[in-house]
Image (cartoon, one colour):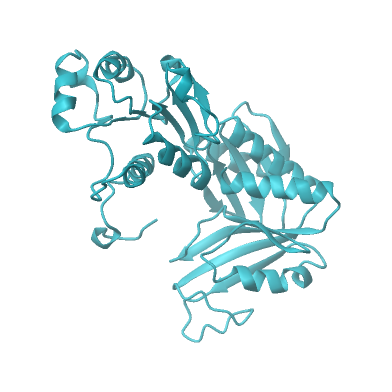
Length: 337
């Protein structure tokens, strides 16, 4: 489950029970910061409920002071550690040479409704834009053109949807909310178990495990994943990732050409390079794969067991989806974000 889903569902649960709650949302950052705009945290009268807005340096301060800061309405708080004395509004330093602006607001029916839309966008894997002002006004926009909220924010939201980018303008954060990564795994061997665990439980990806052998598709082996004996390959999209982990040369020989002929953006193939070469010898589409084929799959981290292989694979897919090459950050020139 994604962090956004956890926050949205925790907010709906708190509101349904009549509990007072506060939503903290990062709406603007500058310099070096741990989280980006759109990060959220929910706290109730019992304490932290879901999400985070930093690596741990802001959460305690928000927990202690958010209630009185929001007594008369939404509040904007700026954490700034770029100044030498770091004697900021709350006398609190980030320790990472950055500025974080956080919107604090009491949970209302309108706020919960917007969070419910974000939840639906995530579960239905659809794009959307949520515009949030520093005063807590909002507008939600869907690709169909349907919107809810403050119409004065519509033009900016339409731009975010058209450019597929989030941005800050006129004291408003226009957030492009993207669906979770979809991963389709062909094969249900024991090495798929840790891959599903990392992808679903830790990252909140939407995972489907495909295996024609129904005996291997037990929900208890792959909690959180969809289990099917056949998958409509034609439905794969450029933002999707697919991996072949069948451990069967004949199965891979049948699937590889079909997958290469889809728009799927990332295609990983388990096994040594020589095995891949043999498979490609029988695939007329091999020269046309457009760089989508990753074989052997995963980043070079010295992986030597199923858990490490899963880690290397997940990291490579994440780098691909972010348009990065997976090199160490120490070798990166310029800012991380």
